Image (tube, rainbow, N blue to C red; front, side, top):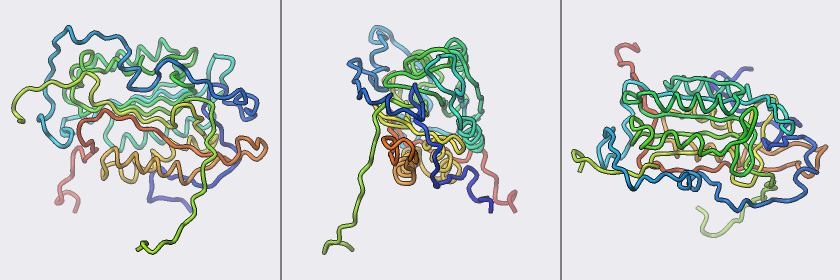
Length: 329
């Protein structure tokens, strides 16, 4: 029987089609990760890459239009448009070590559907080279976002610690974020800049831990101008924590995207984004486990997403054009 109540359903059954989104991404990867985890000495996290970009912003005075009151609790999501949502969907690669990412089109289609229901202007770009990807990002950053609530960018690809792959080569994620900082894209200053990253961040595995119930006796100034950091109002949601695999099912899509789409479809206009992403983390952590009995070292592994937030207010995708009660009758 079809599940009609959830538009982007999550299938919690297991099979043997789970693969990590690492740069090797080989089902027979026991030899690949046996060399152990190599820690990159260079800072590669979201905040580190943004901070180390090398912008000398202290010597410049940047100004931008104030999109919301200084001490507003929530972001202003009442602009005419929700905003652009770019999805970079990478399935095939020209890099010889990269295998095709079966299942990524399911992720892409489900996410595009969910984002359209949240009133985003969705644009999908498939198998872009780095040059093509940068061109699309530059175009988006050069648009006038005055009448938009926010911008959202999703990358579905292979990755490793600190890097993600375009069709032809790897690049650092700050190559994307840096275009949308306040001094480079002033019409998005003070507005949410949301990034969803489905890719491995390393080659380590998470075997998980079994929890057992232990029974105890205790059971039972708004009108004035103000300055903000140029890197404020970013949210980056990774499918996994630094150094670890990110799992993808070849028929149902990645664990992270399955969970994200389920939450967006069910609660996208109900919960704020951080609450919603907390439940995404819960789904991935509790409802998924790899099923690769032919590769014992990768069998029954777990995953947990990682959220980096520089948001300064509550972000909620409220109804863009609510229909009046009379119109609904």
